[in-house]
Length: 305
Image 1 (cartoon, rainbow, N blue to C red):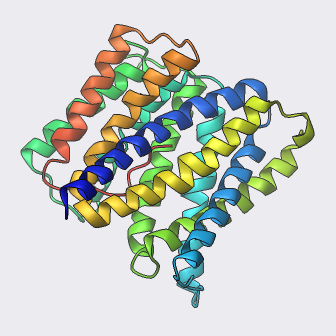
Image 2 (cartoon, rainbow, N blue to C red):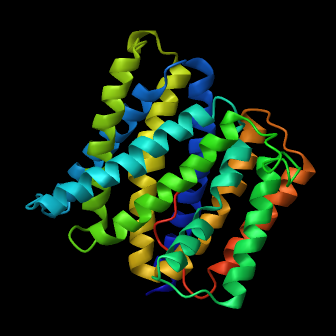
């Protein structure tokens, strides 16, 4: 690959990570203005799916249609866990926890995937990987406890922290379904179907929940929606997938560790959030543990938003 092309790929990756960090800020802004934010998430993934579908067709790609019961189960599994359940935990969690802390907790995703893969017999657990998992887990406890790593054990944490942990569980499940799905569909098609099925589920719950007054949304809500759909989903996912193809999953996925960093910085700048040194130390432990545990094999489906 020419130097210029590789440099451009790295630049796009950095921008994509900044966009994923910004999704936490956008989500926090939306939940501060709307009591029922699920319709925003439904529209986010509906718009993202349309953009991805148009880009596939414009590139001359065909969109494969589900042809079996297993295909449909995979598609709805992707939408339920990766979009619907994750989105529920994401938005309602951000009603109770700051964007910076939430992003630092979700940085635990790669470690959660490694542990589940080991417990299910899909991956081996080496000493460096185990040490990295323990370090990341301790860091996550510190972030959840707002500086106190034992707060979760004592039940001294709130609903927001548990919901953000739900994001980790939902995306870990989605990752394993995604691995199976990519044997049948391309990465873009997988994201396309996950977006549409997840948007449908979110839309149904949003209509049941009520308070869908789209005409009363402020410009901040609309700006957040457009950012989540176009930048945080369609562009960022496309650039990430392209980078995996060009420089490999290992080098690409290392960049994911920048997402919580960008989230904390943007939240401090745009939302005036202040994160304690103890929480920052816990976040550093999470990132260090993730790097140590993924040094031998890196997963390409870790969640960022």
